[in-house]
Length: 232
Image (cartoon, rainbow, N blue to C red; front, side, top):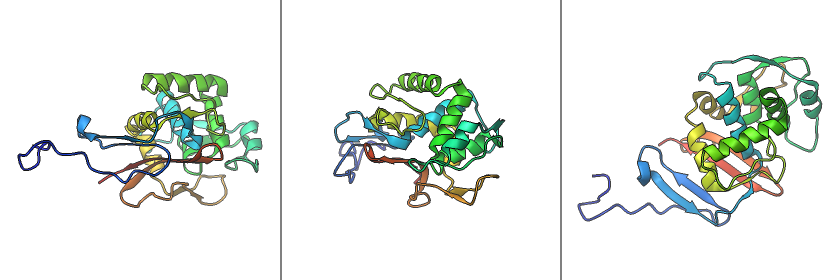
């Protein structure tokens, strides 16, 4: 019986090396309630920075699902996304107006180097405006039971995107069921036609200790954030 050790009673939860600061939540898939290893730190909403893009990807893929390596529809980059790509004050990816990229390529540009301009562009493509897309993000959060989460933009640049580690774990467990998302966040780098050079993942833990994703996020209000997944 996996719930007993030597016939002497239930197995104690493992002692984890919790971070000294902030908040953390951990779960092991495939063990039901026994896989919930709990949370550490006060579960109060705090800024999550670019981890916001995980919900952006979840909403986009829910409306426009892809197979694991399916490119999806071709989408023409608008002038706004191109203009924003040369910003020196946020994380962006250089794209040219009028160039057609497929949905998967855009997801790669949003999730791997954390392109804020691409997150906003995908939001406009999906919902017509970023504001309408953010409403969809918040509806999705409520559906997932993320009661302490509020989204205010699609990229995570604003400090009003707030959540808890327990809520973000709910999102991580759901979005990692999507084969297209899972394959993108596992990529250490990518190249996209029309985008200069090789693009490296901001998650430098990939490939170490079984890590297969998911997303980093950092800003002055948020500090450092990491949503991660690993296999044994």
